[in-house]
Length: 201
Image (cartoon, rainbow, N blue to C red; front, side):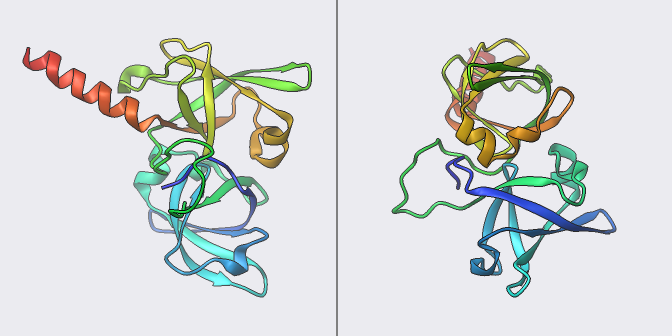
């Protein structure tokens, strides 16, 4: 479980393909403090640390085909920046919202607008999956906990402050960029319960 408060960006240093799996080697400031089997969010995708080179501060994670199909992990290249967050501990403040690290689908950035030092990013997504956003509700974009503005049927916007813009990989997002979405867990449960209720009514 994560909070959607990104700690920093990790840089991809190597990618290996093993049949349908992809092995990603990344470096970050706390790589030498990670442990084997530890869960780390990568652009909102929960992946397990499987190997660590503490001297080089490089760690390895593996993404299976299901993850590659539902996220933007398969689009990564060497030197790309990835938002990372270690899993929450029970004594940690929940500064964002509950993020499972299970990406629901991807979206495409359709517009970036600067507004007096901040930025508004608009994303379009396929709503045939049944996922929705609500005004002032929560959504995770590339693992970043954000508040929805201007919610529409298959589109929403988020406001990004300068700190978030610099600390996360939002400074690399432009129109056409594919991002990962995880919709609010509470909203997904309510939607499923209501759908079952209406179906049996």
